[in-house]
Image 1 (cartoon, one colour):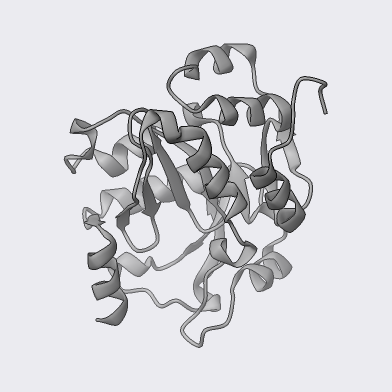
Image 2 (cartoon, helix red, strand yellow):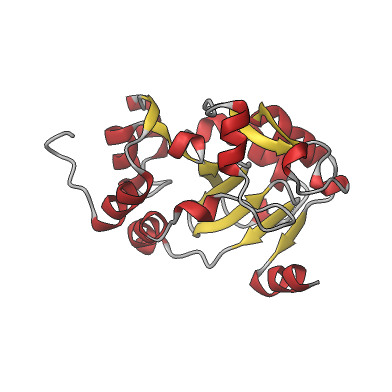
Length: 221
């Protein structure tokens, strides 16, 4: 760890739960400069210290927003979300969830790709960005990024045992997709290229933008 980097309580607690990062890719100086003033300084410090990397055998990843620009555009282009801010993917999960930061509105949206949902978060002001980011990491739990099948059994560990650890461009996806009526069962999981798979899911044209109340209604419908 560099002398300039001081680990905050939120990320320290995150590392206690998620262990050391793996498959680290160094973050170029040009990338840091590109996102200064657009993403929280604290996130850029994480990039400098840890790079772009995965945790827990690929359950959770800190990603380079550049890699997800086209994917994010595909998911947002048929909504009015792009009218309100400029957004960047800063993290993702093994099952294709994308965590999105708005330059003015902070942690504002999460893409739940397997369901075709864009879930609205509380967001924050630019001045609150560091605090919101530390809360995101410090409040994260390992099971938050896992998913359950129809019998309420977690699916990540069985998927790892069958397919092996994920690479930076891989995810676990359902075939057939849940969007078109596929079942949430282990037998339907495959290891796929994340960019190809998320592009295909976006093209189904069944994307829904949900606030907290809409999400609760979905859960109990």
